[in-house]
Structure formats: C-alpha cells, structure tokens
Length: 263
Image (cartoon, rainbow, N blue to C red):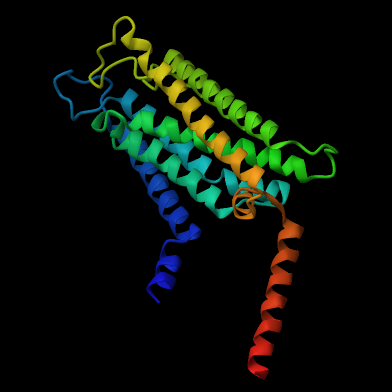
C-alpha cells in the first residue's frame, strides 16, 4: 500500500508539475524584482541585487522553464515516446542547475555544485547519444547494425562534443551579457587572476569526459551482455509501436485474469 502511494505521489507528472510551477512562479517574481531593482548597488550590500543580477536570473529561469517543455514538444513533433526515466532525469538536472544553482546560489553555497552537475551532464548527454544511436540502429532507414564498441565510442564523443559546446555558450553569455557562467569572478564581482580564471572551464570539461566515459563503459557492457532492461529504459519508441505494445500487454493481462477466475 505504501509503495503504491509513493508511486502515485512521486510519479513523472507530479514531479514535473512541481518543478514547472516553481520555476514559472519564480520567473514571474524575478521579472517584478527586475523592474523594482536599482541600476547599481553598493559592493558592501551583499543582499541587495542590481538590475543586471535580476536580468541574469530572468534569462536563466525563463529559459529553464521553457526547456522543461522540450521533451513533450519533441515527443509530439516526432510522434515518439520518451522513456519516463530520461524525462525525470532531464527535469531534475535542469531544476538543480537553474533553479537551485542560479536562483538559490547553490553554486556559491556548495563549491562543488557545478562540478557535480557537469559530471552528471556527461552521463546524461551520454544517455542522449546512446538513445539516438540506438533508435537509428533499429530503424529501417539506416540499413547498418552498429556494434556495441561503435555505440559506446559514439556515446562518449557525442557527450564530450555537447559538453564543449556548452562551454562555448557560457563564454558567449559572459562575453556579451556580462554574466559569470564560467565562474571567472567571485560572487562579489572580483575577477580571478591567471590560471585560476580557467580552472572552472577546464574542470567542467574534464568531469564531463569522466561522466561520458563511465556511461560509455556501462552501455558497452550492457550491449555485450544483451541486457533488455537497460535497452528498454533508454529506447525511444514510435507512438504507434508503443500503443500496440500496451494493447498486447493489456490483452495478455485480460486473458490471464480470465484463466485465474476459471480456476
């Protein structure tokens, strides 16, 4: 009974809804604070934020709120079913990075917060790469069966490439919008000097590679072993195929129930 209650409370829709509502409400709040905030602040007044601070928060929280909707938009657009485990992992990562990290300053409260998230991003991007190549591997449009080694290498390279592109995005935002995504400055605005200024970027790339490598090895071992559970948890399905599978499983359960009743 308790396990069923937990499943009802902590399901995909409930968790996703909580994250979306909290981020959307925060976006509205930050927009109001942006209007009321002063242009500049006294460096000694740490608790008072300027308009530029709220603009950064608004861009991050607004884009994060929109990004939460991407899985459902992609699923409807391409008529596919995305595994719930991937959707929850994606939403939780986005929530931790944007809402907790930027809005609630977890990047400064917990020094290793950024490193942890970039390590997990390497794993998650690896999951995405694995999902895409597995989907192509099963479609009739690509008449090639890819080996486990190739899938693992592609997964690793895909994750590292997107991780590098993310660092380019951070640099661009810092350069043109005067943000601090690459942590080249302290919270109060003083710039890091020398090698310290690039430590954050290089650390992010290194831990992303580590996360990608870990997932690539896991995917290789599972593919070699032929693990069905691992494949099902990360496999995209066409909407028609998913419906037919549900119909078959539902009819199978119906037949089984009838047999039990006869006994």
